[in-house]
Length: 368
Image (tube, rainbow, N blue to C red):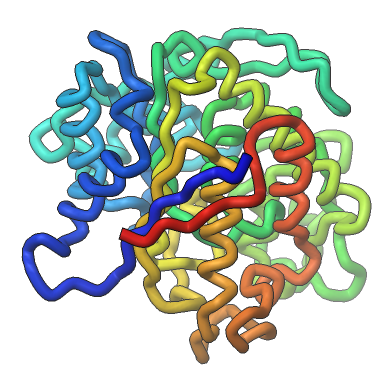
């Protein structure tokens, strides 16, 4: 069966074509009101953005989803989980403070914030998985126990997954630090001759796996969590994963966690992907680089695989923007995220997710 994905483009010449109006039309067209029952505790799964990042989904747009859930009879709350790495979202107190600083306070969004894995990431539910990599997964308790869910994602690049959309939001976003650690489970390695001893990687490593020894950094691979934070701040590209071995397994583990997050939510979840400010990096980094393609629009669906497939295709159809991190594949039809992160395989997210029964890669795009 071909999944339906509903799309509203970026252009507007009147109030009925505003982004707010488009969100409401997309919600209705995709039948997302039908995923919510009367008095549902409905988790609106977001990424609030790391401090310094400003390309996360706008709280003004999230407010429309909150209102629509409430109009459908649900009781919405905004949610995310603690990060694996150190930063502004590694515990619930700092996480909520960051969310409020980014505009997600009650006066704007009209719903409370609940960090789903608790104060320090210990509020979890263990679920059976019976997959290739996991026989069980750990999902944040308040997401697992929510009656329904709206997954609202900023579609962008990612240095390990290739891209981040609905699947990644379900997987990394719904897992506590324990689950995130299981998904990564890759180890970095130092590239000989490149390190200049700046120490940036030492400052951001949450596990203390890196140490500045004289003018070079040393790496304790046994302590490494595989979160990749060191790679985002290394100015000399002196740290790498074993791309051919670690990355495919990481993607598969991530997909299996996405399936776990959907446990009990089949027919009770809706998805929005926002294709604005399509940056090379996840919103976990404390900055926002230049978008690699122009803004495109908003998509909605009940199928997380189909909406990511459609989003990726729409991005690839664009001409790449000059002067950005996009180093190759600038022409329409070429793999844009592969042009940024050449060792990634975004297509594997979609194929393995379909194999696991998370959704369908084949879709029908319905433009509103």
